Amino acid sequence: MNPAGIDRETLHGAAAVFCASLAISCLALAAGWQFERAALRELEEKKELFHHHSHNYLQVEAEESAAVDVFHELIELQRKGVVGAERRIDWVEALRASVGRLRLPAYRYAINPQEIHAPDDFVVAGRFRVYASTMHLGLDLLHEGDFLGVLNDLHVFAPDAFSVAGCRLARLARPVRWLPDQANINAECDLKWFNIRLADGSEIEL
Image (cartoon, rainbow, N blue to C red; front, side, top):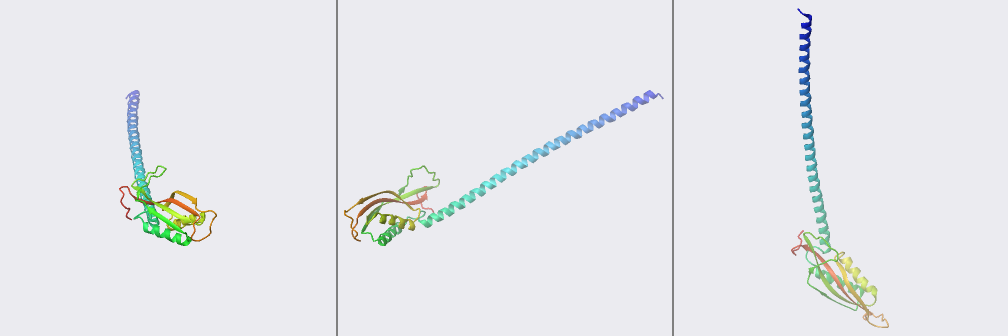
């Protein structure tokens, strides 16, 4: 037997085994790399899906919380008389009670029909609209403090339900007469009583 031939056959066999092992290793490495890429892609998809559902959940939760806050605000406004049917009789009774408490010589009032209120600043009202009824109020006063007393009484009765749109005070007599039935000052004012309704003008039902 030729020793050189044995060495060549042995060398060829070893080379073949090495090449086969290298090929198998490369295939295994490629398969592992593909598996890792697929696993990473699946992980990213699951993370994206998780973030999407989390965002939707948080958005729904925020909307529900906002809806609860709006409902509570509407309940509070209803308590103040701003939401629901206008309380014109209550306004007049509160005015009469204040005039009686302050012992004013005389008073006059007239209430216009309700109209859509147009504020000076732009307001996004959404589903709701702000309406206002203007009360023209005339007061015969002993002094300026009586006028502030009437406004304070009305505010205590209906906080945040009205605002003074305009007012004019004029002195009636000189010298000043401190008699209960004699006015020294006349006040002519416009009060706006607010009411929040749905955009179509119908009342908000709670």
